[in-house]
Image 1 (cartoon, rainbow over the protein chains, first blue to last red):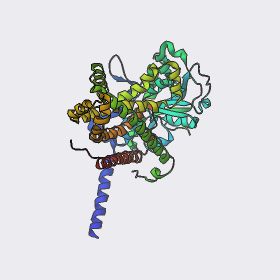
Image 2 (cartoon, chains in turn blue, green; image 1 turned 60 degrees about the vertical axis):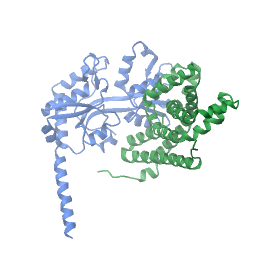
Image 3 (tube, rainbow over the protein chains, first blue to last red; image 1 turned 90 degrees about the vertical axis):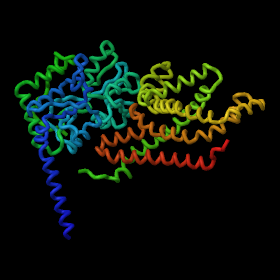
Image 4 (cartoon, each protein chain N blue to C red; image 1 turned 45 degrees about the vertical axis):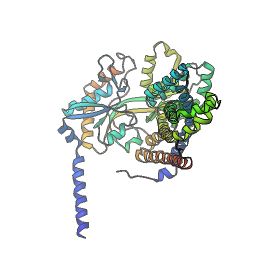
Amino acid sequence: MKIRLLAAATIASLTMVCGMAHADQLSDIKKKGELVVGVLGTDEPLSFIDPKTRELVGYDVDMGRAVAQKLGVKPVFKQITLAARIPELQQGRIDLLAASLTHNKEREGQIDFSLTTFITGQKVMVKANNPIKDVPELAGKRVATAKGSSMEVNIKKAVPTANVISFDTSPQALVAMQQGKAVAFVNDEMSLVRAMVELGDKRTEYKILPANISVEPLALGIRKGEAEFKKVVDETLRELESSGKAENLYEHWFGQKSSLKMGKRSFKIDSDKIDE
Amino acid sequence: MTTFDPQMLISGQYHDMLVAGLKMSLQYLFYGFWIALPLGLVIALCRLSPYKPLRAFGTGYVEVVRSIPLLAQMLFWYFGVPEMLPQGVKEALYEGPVESICAVVALGVYTAAYMAEDIRSGIRAVPSVQMEAARSLGLSYMRAMRLVILPQAFRLTVPPLISQTLNLWKGTSIATVIGAAEMMYQAGQVESQSFRSFEAFAFVSVAYLGVSLIITGIANWFQHRWPVRTM
């Protein structure tokens, strides 16, 4: 009886200690003096290595920096893979995900999300001489995507009979399509536009199908239940929005000044709600 | 806190995906082995050949293939080699299961280099007087090799060859980088769809371990049944 009581007390106090240790990630970060931000580093212009300066830059990187600045700590960027990003966050090896992360319902069970930082659609790229005009025509065809991505899931939803082949990175999937190993390549619109820019003269050999297979709100990822930390992250984003800095960042990385030359920003950073 | 859910491994969609991956990995092992063993034998014989160009070829093959990681070779056979083929062959290949074909070729070619070294050492372990005796009976070099040397060398070579087969079996997992739907790939798919990493990789680990133990079991049986003869 005594032993049982002792065990119960031990468990109770352990839970409390653990609970306390996890109660506030925010103070942990401040104590450490650094904010570990997980980025892909391979997804221009969200996060990539600038070929001239060899430094990590991008829209996601700037978001991470802004949060660190708000907290008054040093940002430490850690490159992670697409498939490992959510486990890395859950296991506490990083504090904040700024890794081309799509906010969707399935993932809400795993992690929390900041306000939506960017909205893009996922589209399909095929060779220009391919007779395919619309997404449903991909039925039974080989389609290349990146492993562990939301494209992988969304193309299956849009065309259940498509034969989806996933590669470790999006560039590999693109090459597979260029070589003819797959009919189509699925990615978010922004990355497809970038791929077109990089193709240079060869861009006329490819086309992007007009239909969106999904609308993709991107957001920063936060470990589940860290309400205090999420509040600071969201505040940072709201300030970026109200000061006009968010608009500038968009123009810098995506707008007419950038190589992507995408149109005016059609969204505002003001909500963490998603449709569906 | 999530708990381990064995149910998803016993039945349902995820079970089917993982089992399909296991079957494909076993096929890679099977076909890869039957490329590696004959090719390894040919390379070993080249390395021991009395003709210098053949020896140079054998040595070159072993050194090149052994020095480049399987991962790099897998990508090379998938993204590089098919592009060099004539247009017609290329198109025919791309119509079919190109990931699997390239994976099997990469695995076979890679493992052959290691098997060649094992076979070579096995052949060299057969005393040279055996060859001399066979030649003095009037057998040609190739006939002496086939009828006298190789049968003796084979028994010596089985344990290292089994070890290479285990490496080949584990190496099938590298094919995941070229989108080949083998067991590691399917585990990754299950993981990204269900967020259940632990279950998926537990299945994979047990499957790799199980097949490896079966291969080891076959090796032990073989060595018991056909032990190395003292020479």
